[in-house]
Length: 334
Ligand code: SF4
Image 1 (cartoon, rainbow, N blue to C red):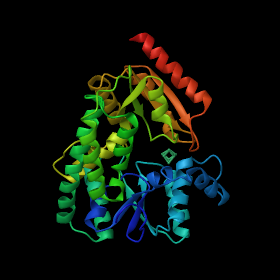
Image 2: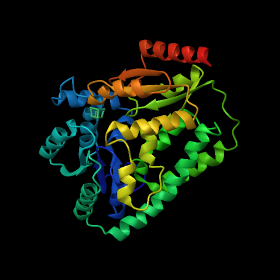
Image 3: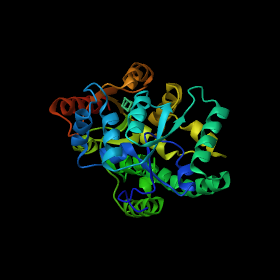
Image 4: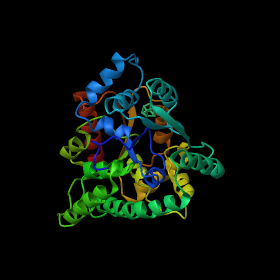
């Protein structure tokens, strides 16, 4: 499949799952979150779901995923029922009643290896592929993951990649933008171009924590204030920058679906390795993950700014002022 126009072999994902299994089955994974937020109609997609009956106090991502499936006529969805969002359970039932074929996938909160392996095997059987093909696909995707790792290094070590570029490539690795060949080509091109750039000079080095932002101009605004995001926590996790002996270990190291301990360790390492001056913790309105803010603030070795976003769109003046004040405060500290 080239791009996201041909949806005949598409299989929607409500969250990151082992895409190696989907590609090995000859199908095309489409991360529904990316499909929603990258759409020019993302705002109206939220309204569309509300018109269908979703109440205002349901998170915008759930509404966006609902509309993305229906608007793009996606007939099959892998719904992550454990390790992501409890809203997905009801969303999957709503989509099933609209005729969408739902395959469930669960991450074990306990990080139990056998449980995760059995979930992967269930998915493999549902999609009719073999472990040999999956491993072959994994080796191919690992080559791209290594390049993403280098691209990330160029962001925080060589300082030649913007926070937005880093975000876009890492967030896209949840499904390799539905086309790994094109994805790799685009990545090669930007790496080739970035290494020729002069190092960027922003004073303040920031880490971005949490689910990807619903704001459309977030990274650009931060750079206009003299800061730069050199660590995109969850997006980097999508790229799985650890090269494990097998696919089960790979998805056990992925921090997002499990308890906050793994994330905290990852964040603390990044603060040290990337010399971060501060962290921005993004929380989504009506999301249970907001509760993690208490732990993140307590554990962070550097100042944390917590921002909350609701619907897609530009950051409003109140959030802009909070970011500006935070960056100014960090400038005074260095
Ligand atoms: S942001 Fe939170 S509530 Fe919304 S889909 Fe993600 S996990 Fe669920």
